[in-house]
Length: 208
Image 1 (cartoon, helix red, strand yellow):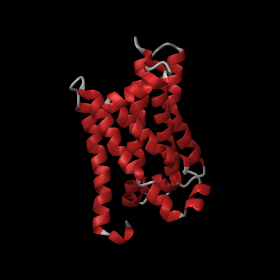
Image 2 (cartoon, helix red, strand yellow; image 1 turned 60 degrees about the horizontal axis):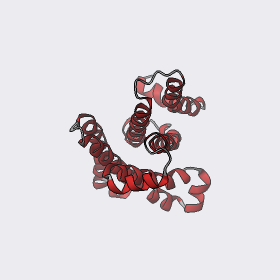
Image 3 (cartoon, one colour; image 1 turned 90 degrees about the horizontal axis):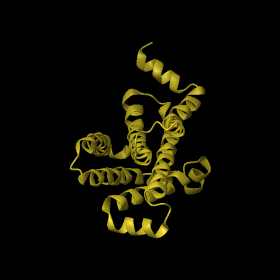
Image 4 (cartoon, one colour; image 1 turned 180 degrees about the vertical axis):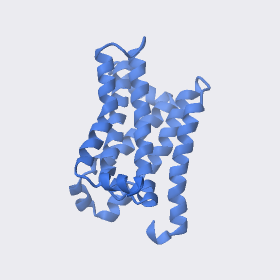
């Protein structure tokens, strides 16, 4: 059996879902432990805001990578795990927003609204979170039955727009320091993943 076949077989194992949930939880647990043990550096608040944002973007990239991996490598079991990754994106986005609201804004609603209005990168981040919310709210089987498969799939195409907005959020956040190296890496990854989808639709429109 080839390594790829072993991976495909492992993804179909009942324990794969539990392992996936544990792996998705690890970064959050590590950040919590670091905060409790005071090991997040001289500015823990900023570290938490940045780290939760980074993990949101990483899980978003991995979520978008699942379909290409499933189709190109024949790892059918990834379809069973996709929703868990999608929900993880939303959970980490909520953590990111919460850290910003608590540590940067002191939970002052007026200050948060004003900040969203005057800083484009905050607006983009908030917009990405808003668009993720209906996706997370319809990530269970009953929602699929209620919406119908076609409408559910159409709604979840919003994740592609979220990816673009998330990159804009990151780029504009780094523009103040003129540091675009890391955002460029994510932009290339997401461009490849979205480009693969566009290429597949162009090549086989009936399967879009």
